[in-house]
Image 1 (cartoon, one colour):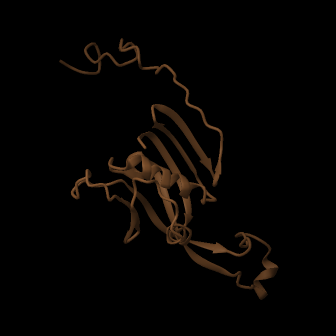
Image 2: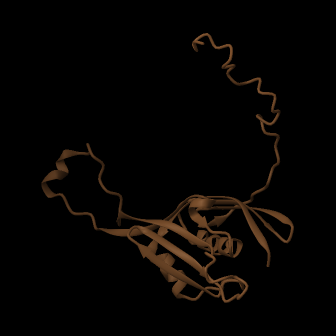
Length: 189
C-alpha cells in the first residue's frame, strides 16, 4: 500500500481509557505496521508505529500520533448553574462525578501525525480512533494509489467530504495589494 497525507486537521477528544482499550483489543493494523508502542510522558501520549520492514533503518523515526492528556470532571447529571435558586443551599446534595483523563489529538498534520516513514498507515490508525471519539472532528486530504481522498469524521461518524480546487486570491503575484514602502510618507530617508 502506498499513500501520502497532504492535509490533516484534528480536534478529537476521547477518554484515554478508550484509546488504551482499542489497542489492548489487538485491532487490525495496516500491513506495514507490525506493532504499536504507546508511551506516556507527563501529559503527552505518543503512539508510535513499529515496522518489521528491514528497508526502514532502525534509526529512521517512524510515524507517531501525539495527543495531550487532560483531566476533565465528568458529572453523572448536569451540575447546578451558578446563580440558581438559593432555597437549595440548605440541603445541597453532592452530584456524583469523577475525573476522567482525555486524549486530545488536536492540531494539524505536523502536530498530531509526526514523521514521514509509515505516515499514511498511521493515518489509517488515527482514522479508526476518530470513529471511537464522541467529541471533535478529523478532516484530511490523502492520496492512495494515485487517487486523492477527502476524509471527514465528526463526533465518531463518517461524513461526506470532497476536495475542491480553487484559485488562491494572492496567486496573481503582481503585488498590487501590498504597502508601497518606498513611497511611504511615514518613513524618513
